[in-house]
Image 1 (cartoon, rainbow, N blue to C red):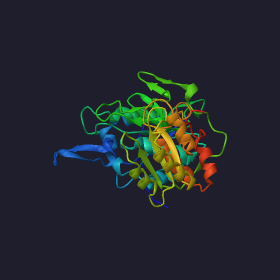
Image 2 (cartoon, rainbow, N blue to C red):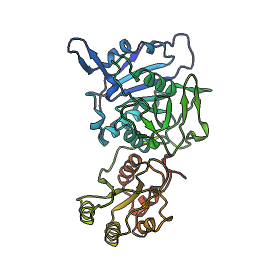
Image 3 (tube, rainbow, N blue to C red):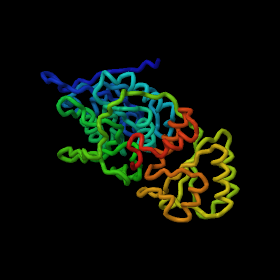
Image 4 (cartoon, rainbow, N blue to C red):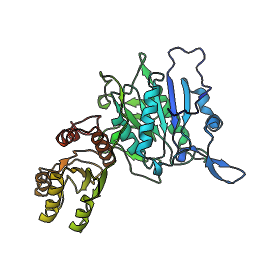
Length: 357
C-alpha cells in the first residue's frame, strides 16, 4: 500500500454546515511551477506552500485536503501504471470525500481522463482534471482560475447531493466530459475542445450546467479496476502508406488491438492488398478499431464503398469516439480477458458516455 504525504488547507468553513470535502491530487505539470528568485528560473512548487501562491484558497468554503504525487510527473511521462495508481487512490478515499480534483499536465490530460472514466465504474462523485498553460509562478497564469473553479465544481451540491457524477476536464471556463475531450491548442488558454459532445457546464460570472448532457447518478455499486492491457497500437493512415509498412505493424509481437485512424467518416483505401492485410489480422484475433482522424463527426462505415471495405474486413466502428478514449477503452476491455466477440461488442457500446448511443 502506497503511503502519501497528505495535508489540509486552512479554508473558510467555520460556522458552516453540510460542508463539502474535496481531495486534490497533484500529479505534476506546468501548473505546479514557481519562480525561484535565487536561481532565476522556474522550479517545482513545494505543494505544502501552495497557499502562499494561491491565497484565494483561504476563501474556499469547503474542506480541502491535498495529496502530491512524488516525484511530480511531466504529462509526457504519464503512463497506465499512474492511471491505475490514481484510480486506486480515489477508490481508497472514495467514502471520505464528496469530490476529487486532479492537477495534471495538459499534453496527456485527455488520455488520463479517458482512462479514469473506464477504471472508475458507477462513479457517483465528480473527478475533475485541470491544469494550466502557464505556471502558477507566472504573472498572467491561468492556474489560479482553473484550480479554484475546478475545486468549486467538485464541491458543488444541491440538496446535499453532488451535482456531477463523472470524470471531467475543466479548462478556461468550460467543463467537458473527460472521455470526449481533446487537447487542440498549445499556445492559447483555450486548450481543450469537445467537438462531438456539448460542454457539461460553462463558467463565467455564473456556472451554468448543461444538465441534459450530464451523466445521471448511477444505481450500481462503485467499482475501481486495477488492470490495463497496453498491447495496443495506433495506425494513422495517409495517402501513400505502403502495404509493407502496414503488414509490419500488424505483425508486431504481442499486438492485440489497433486503433485505425481513417479519413473523414471512417474511410480508407480500397486497395485489395491493404484490405486483405486487415482481414487476415482480424481473423488472427487482432481487433481493429476504426476512429476518424477528424476532430468532429463520426465513423459511418456503411456510407461509402471505401468504408464498407473496412467493414467487410472485420474492422469495428468506433462511431464518434476520440483516439484518446479509443486507446484507453481498448486497454480497459482487453484487460478483462473476455472472448474477442464480447470485446468487440463492448467496443460498440456506450460504457461511460464516450460514444453516441
